[in-house]
Amino acid sequence: GARGGLAWRTFQIQRRLAETEGNLDKVYSFGYLLIAAPSGLLVEPPMVTEAQRAVIVAVGGQNAAVADRVYRINRGARIVTAPRNWRSYLERDWGKVDPPPKLLRPKNQRELAEWRKWINVGWEEGVQQADEVFEADLDRLNGDYMGMIRYRELLAQGMITPPYAAQEDRGITGGGSEMRIGDRGLNITAPALLNPKSDLWITAPR
Image 1: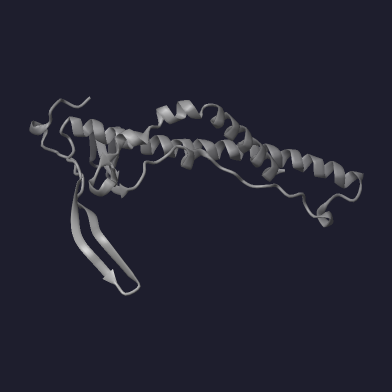
Image 2: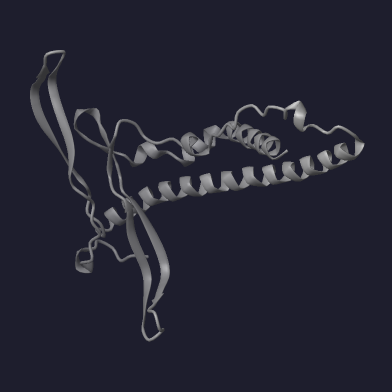
């Protein structure tokens, strides 16, 4: 029951996603957020979270700290070969649901009635689980995407520094069973950092 409801509801969700994939491609266009790097590689920008009206009360309640906004770099820049895709977040397949073995099936009318009752209960729980899984996946997608957009916004305001990547030309390397010609290495040499010097901000924050 539960596995059947989970698979059925997930199939419905996936079918709806397939119907709207064109719009989703436009909404979650990760490619526009990437930073070009040497040798055809790309740098995925940091993900920055924002909390508003953050309050911290010390143990004992004798003092507290309040901030209008708190920015945090949750994940730094990364070197990638291709942009992310919303499909890797939202597409799921729970596989084929096999029927229970004969040993576990009802043997009389009383057991059959109980069987059907608990199958229905399990089905509803499976449907609910599928919705919860989708919501969690969607929250993760939105969090990552908005985190990269927030980085771009802060960068435009001078509130965060960009990451820097450097290429190292190593020429010909290896030997024996493998040799690399035109070998190059790319390293992020400086991470993005939040800039607390408000006099250097280009525009006032929201």
